[in-house]
Length: 208
Image 1: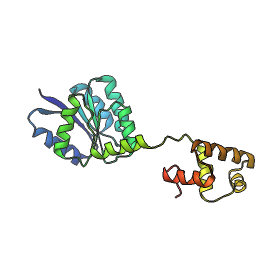
Image 2: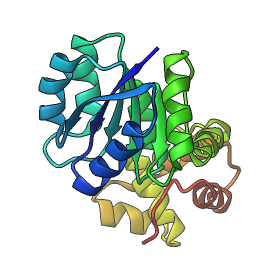
Image 3: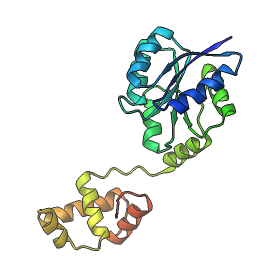
Image 4: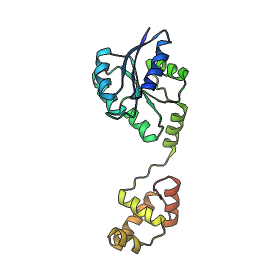
């Protein structure tokens, strides 16, 4: 069975490289190429591919939005996101959009081909680095701190007292004590020092 593939990427070199690869594989047919998300929607509906290799970062409309829109028209299409970035939030957003796979752009031609075939078989192909990122995210404790609490926590990490924090945030000392209490409960910490240590360990605050 021939697998019909569409390429969506705003970089011409990437489009040409992927096109050459697809033309070299007998049962993979390149049916459409799009340089943007908006163009992908137009040519995708016309060409009706089985698999789409979708760039996740594009200037006019990113791959996340494009994937959602394309799936509205072609609910059976298999979308594999391609990205130079392997951050957790991008990966999660990709799968939430309906994509079935996520490959980093340094993937080999063999990995690309295997991913296309895996997607057609109902699997979720991902790069090894992406798998590692998802495993680390799953093992990371889920803390539910509000923005104000994170702000207070950052100032605690700078060694500031409740009174200093209250002055800086234009809040009362009692309100700061309330936030600190909530922080200790949420982080299961027995002291301000332990709370700061936990926050730094899990990158909850940015110390610049």
